Image (cartoon, rainbow, N blue to C red):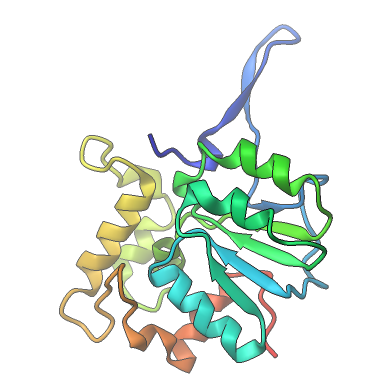
Length: 204
């Protein structure tokens, strides 16, 4: 069952009152909860999927001389990581559906000081929050996504974001296809807007 990384909580039972605390954060090395990305210059980028998200980052990486490979699925991320030696690597996975793999991935990442894990909700989420659609309703929804998702209709957050993007872009020059990325998303202006949401990315 797909579930998000941020939906995993630790149970605190000490003290008078118990409670829940999120275990994972958006981006970090294994040995720290937060990463200073000001000096981050990856030599390699690994994406979880082989569809639109990979196609986008492969294009961007190709322009900057960074190697980009697809793990072809979240269950293959660890095996792809094991192929990396001492090169600086950024791993991009969909936080919205990577919960079942996060513990295993962090065990592998913990063996290296050269790997940073980047966890956007999904590639479709990145597009939506970048405001390339210039859609007032999407801007409003992005302030409180949980108000709009219907769990009986969507099996995961990832599917919700994908469905929303497809519906909102249908019939426009930005029409989205998850399997084959619309080339419009690779135009300089739109690419820049999306990458602005990727805090560690440095333009060259």
